Amino acid sequence: AQSVTQLGSHVSVSEGALVLLRCNYSSSVPPYLFWYVQYPNQGLQLLLKYTTGATLVKGINGFEAEFKKSETSFHLTKPSAHMSDAAEYFCAVRNTGTASKLTFGTGTRLQVTL
Amino acid sequence: GAVVSQHPSWVICKSGTSVKIECRSLDFQATTMFWYRQFPKQSLMLMATSNEGSKATYEQGVEKDKFLINHASLTLSTLTVTSAHPEDSSFYICSARTQNPTYNEQFFGPGTRLTVL
Image (cartoon, rainbow over all chains, first blue to last red; front, top):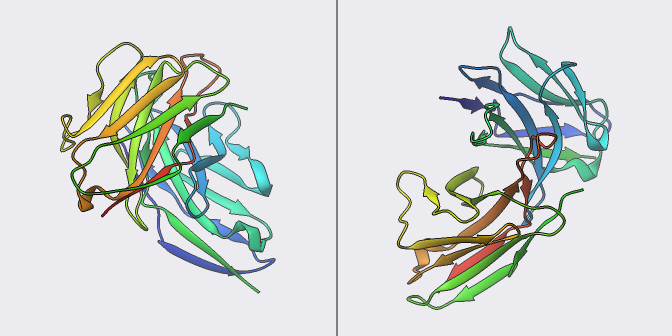
């Protein structure tokens, strides 16, 4: 079984400040890891993913995440927040089998203030 | 990039009626499609997984007779909410995945907001 824990359902940062959204996972086998962003009344957009290889993954809109196997973490960061980053962010995990399913965390709402 | 569309984007219906939501993969063949339900300020909950030409596999607690899923082609899946009631009001999101090994992620549609009066 696999699970995802996102610490902090709501994170508020000032524009220009560092963004850090936390994600820890539980999986019996090496997983694929994803971060998605959801804007109000919209579907999910993939920010970045880790499958194999380099553990520091760069995504769209200046976001990046680092897979740390020893900590079972996949935290999302962005050096400088922008107002347009305000959205809901979901971490997800999937086992590598083709029949496996995504398991989502409960989400973190990012608020960016002036 | 891979694009998934949903239609309609929003629908309002009366209690007891049925509503059909379409999910299409526009530029790739989706061997597997997923239907999720999302309540306000909550995460996505997987309802069912469908493979083209096969019966859908429903998650525990999801009524298969109420949420009819059809995946008749590699580019189209439909979700029909039968005899809808106000508690079925939610945001429904579909997702599609190909068996192409270079694609490891699912592509999500924009969602359909269903309101049952």
